Image (cartoon, rainbow, N blue to C red):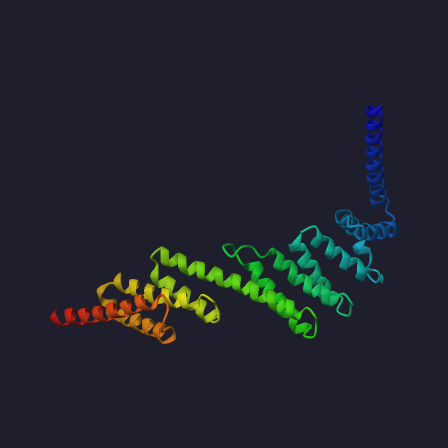
Length: 273
């Protein structure tokens, strides 16, 4: 008896699933634009975003001039977001914002365009194109809607994304340093300080610049040693003016002294030749 009951339940479930699927397919293949559009909205409200998106695909191009087009395009963009198709979501939200400039949904669409790019932003070790795009989109949102309740959230997300770019820049400079490409390390770290002067890594970056400068001097040809040791001394002085205490001070003072001694030695050698 239990087996029969189980079979009946399974059969009922299969029938119900097949029925639901057939209803969807019936609407999808009906050619009835009104029925398809209504079903697209209904499926969206039920959270069945894949089906909703499939139906919107069939009718969006027929809605030009239709007062329902605005909501349909907005929901269509959201179906991509809910399905984690963030690249397409960003595209459709941005397109909506630029097309329906008087829409009540425009502000949300502009934010979601930026937020979709935020979702695409990868770990700092990878390419940061989406991160840069998200920052630009959030900044554009703030400029367009300065009184929006989302402005504070945008600014926080911009700070988060900029921190990721800082980490990317730091890892690149550190990589050059570890590969003993000291000149490239100095340039990379200088760019980091220029672009992110308030970075929490500023002290360590300044330390690495002085150390990389010294190691570059040590590995330079004789003709460039004096100039580069003098640059090291300048870098060390710059560090010590800003940080007169901390774990790097002792080493930086030693680097400065070694660089000063090296300059004297180079000058003495040049006089005897």
